[in-house]
Amino acid sequence: MRKNISLKIFAGLVFAFLLVPLFIIIVTSFGTNSTIQFPIQGFTLDWYSKVFNNESFMDSFLLSLQVAFIATLLALVIGVPAAYSLARHKVFGRNWIKSFFLSPTIVPGLVVGYSMYQFIVIKFQFPIIQGLLLGHFLICLPYIIRVVGSTIEQLDFSIEEVSWTLGCTKLQTFIKVVLPNITSGIFASFMLAFINSFNNIPVSQFLSGPGVSMLPTSLMNYIEYNYDPSVSALSVILMLGTIVLMFVIEKTLGLASIS
Amino acid sequence: MTQRRIPYLILAPGLILLILFLVLPLISTIFPTFFNGGFTLSNYTSFFLDEYNFSIFWRTLKISLIATLICVVLGVPTAYYISQSPKKWRGLLMSITLFPLLTNSVVRSFAWITILGQDGILNNALMSMGVLSKPLTLLYTEFAIIIGSVYLFLPLMVITLVGILENIDAEIMEAAETLGANRLIAFVKVILPLSVPGIIVGSILVFTGSMTAYTTPQLLGGNRNIMLATFLYQSATALGNWQGASVIALIMIVATLIVMKLFNWVAGRMDKRGEINA
Image (tube, rainbow over all chains, first blue to last red; front, side, top):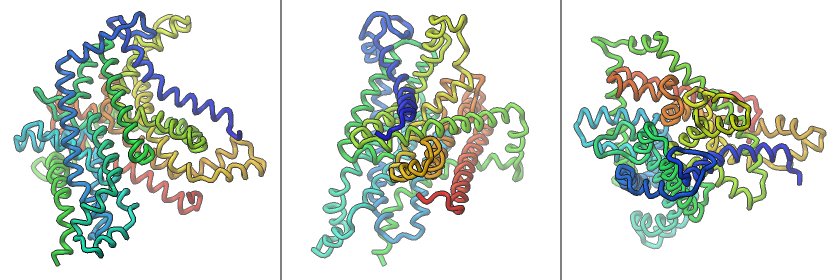
């Protein structure tokens, strides 16, 4: 009972600041009025069916899911062995390489998308979708390297030695001993990379074209010309997705691992 | 001999992809901005000498700085509160903090559009209470961008700080109080110095994040309050000025690096003076 009452009020206000805007969105998504109102008059689920019947939302939703999934998968295939190598092998310039792998987080996302658009779409005439995938791969890679890397560093090295002593090759050890022991880390990093790719706007902003638009970009374009509760409804759907994801991360590696 | 090469073979795909699709595109976009016949810095000097461009650069720094300060002021006590909460509550409070962070930034900016708009929730509430006779212009102002940025990045600050503050022994606070400091003084003199490493890391994240954010200034700032990121996009798409966009791109990268170095330098100096040993 040492807790200071003013500290409690202060923290309470900050939590309210964090949650109230999202709460307002949830409420407004059920309003019957054709523009957003709070408090709402009447109750309807029409805006949700509007979202599901909006082709551009649904198409971009599918595209976002696919891009995020493939980009994350690619980042895992390349990132997990790299993270292992950085943690276990004597590599020349190890710290330098590691910061290089983390460097996509330092370059502003809009700049990543812009230079990729200039270089591979305009200069080398790649289809936009490939640029989009590669851009999102760059978003995902640092999460894999960081989360999987720290999971491997916490893994007891001696179990790998035991496996070698018992006759496994290094590759067999990696597959049969290391991978099963870092599944929670891989899973958590997958979720993190996936949601960050799915939510990303700056990287996708330049890399969109006819038929190629990610969900956040579509939503943003929609907001610029419309102010109706279907935006709230779509927001609520996205929030539900976030909740499911947080629940899954908490059950695997714990939310604390994200920070 | 081959054994020794294996780590490099494992690292090679990632390195090659990064070089091909991050480094080369950056070089190929930014390199030409230094050449106009021969080597020149004129693109950059003229950027900063132009009053309009400079006002955008200045606004970007100002808004990022204010947002960072607000995040520190709001974040430190909140993080301290979380770190001192009983274990069973801490998970819930961390989830409340993380939830906005993992929610799409368009959604988060949109929430503030509905609150701050001309016909928004805040204006309507204040007018129905009789506080205002006509709506305030809140949306499409620098104020709106600052609120949006704080809303976007406060969770990052809090989470970074919780990680540091959790390791502070609760007895230190008790000791300070036993020795006669009241809670506020104990907080300012004991907790605040110990949280400096977290404040530095958090500030780097918030400052560079606000400085390079695109969604928030785009949705909450309107056309009159352009920041570097929205300026880049506008230059490239609406104005077709690719060279100008590339100049802004490098300015954003360099500004980010300078901010990081600056904060780390400050942290290093404080460390040497022995103020923080957390």
